[in-house]
Length: 453
Image 1 (cartoon, rainbow, N blue to C red):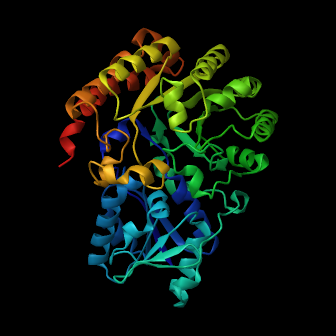
Image 2 (image 1 turned 90 degrees about the horizontal axis):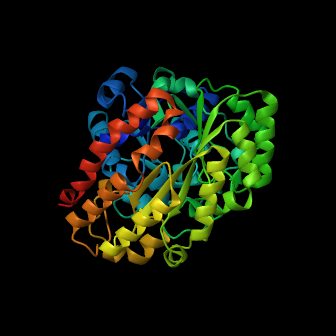
Image 3 (image 1 turned 90 degrees about the vertical axis):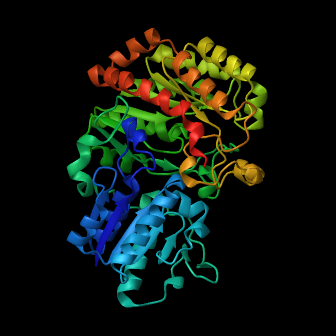
C-alpha cells in the first residue's frame, strides 16, 4: 500500500517564523508502516504546500492527517479536496484534537479517526483496508457516520518502549529547516508522555489516562546517537519529573560521549526540589528549560491547580541562573485581568529578572477541565482562534485594550539589555531571530481582536 502522511499547513504561517518542529508523530507512524512493507512518503505542507500535486505524483492509497485544535478546519478542508479528486482514497485523521474531540471529524470526507497513539492503530487500519476486513474490530477508532459516529473499543495507551524509532529519512530534505527560535537546526526526541500534574488548563495528563509513560533511558541514548543535529528538543509533556530516570539518562549520555545542546520542559517545583539534577544536565549540554510560571499570585496559581508558589518561582529562577541554564519563562494572561492585574504581572516579571519571558492567553482548550467548566462562555468556536493568543473567554477590559496590554508585556517585561548576553550564547542566529520577531509579534497581538467575526 502507498501511504502519504501529511503535516498540515499552520493556521497562521506567522507562527512558523518563531518555531518549526519536525513532524515527529508522523515520523513514528511512517516507521511503523514501513515495518509492514508499505511505501510511505511524508509531506510537510508547512514547507511544501501543494498537497494536490504531491497526491497526483505519489498516487497514495491511504492518506493520514494530523493536527491540533487550531488545524481542525484546515484538516477537514484537505480531506474534502482529496476525496473530491479521488473518491476511492482512504482518509485517516489522528493527532491531539482527534483524540480529545473525535466527533468534530464526523465528516463524509474522512473514513476513520484514530484516538490516542496511532502507530499500531494505523498499521492495523492499513491491513484491514488491504484485506477488506471490518474496521470496528480495531481498538482506538471512531468511524464517521451521518447517523452518529461509531466507536470501537478503546485502545490502552501504548508502552513507549514498544514503539519503533521514528523514521527521520522521511524528512531528510527538510532537516536543516526545523528550529525553535535560536535553536537551529533542531531535532525532536520523545523520552516520555503525560504529566504528573493536574493543571486545569492542560489536557496532556488526561490523554494518557493520568499515567506518566516513560521510555527506557538506554533506548533514548541509542536514538540520540542517530541524531545529526547539534540541538535536541525533548518534546515531552514534562521531562524531569521522574528524577531517577533523568539522572540515569544524563549519566548514559555522558558515558556515550554525546555532545548536544538540550531544550526541555521542567516544572518550577522540580527545579526547586532537585537542583542537583539540573546541575548534572547543565554539564552535558542542557541550555534551556521551558518553565510554566503562569501567574503572579499564589491565589491564582492555586485556582489553576498549578501546585507551585511565587516563592518557588523566584528560587527556580535563581537556580537556573546560577547553573547558566536559560529559563524560557512562560506566563498565561487571564482574560479576566484588569488593568491593575496587567501592572502587577509586569512588576512580578521584572522582579524575577528573567532573561527571556513569553506571554500567552489562558485558553479553554478542548479536553481540559477549564473547557468543560466554561464552554458556555466561549466568545468564539472558530478552531483557528485556539492559538493561545486570542481570548476565547470574556475579557474584563475591552478587547482592543486587552490586546494592547498583552503587547506591552511582550515589549516591556524583559529589558532587551538583559536578553543580549543570553542570546549571544546562541550566536548570530539567536540575535537575529529575536530582533526579527519582536516587532511583527507585537503588531499581530495588537490586531488580534479583529479576527472574531
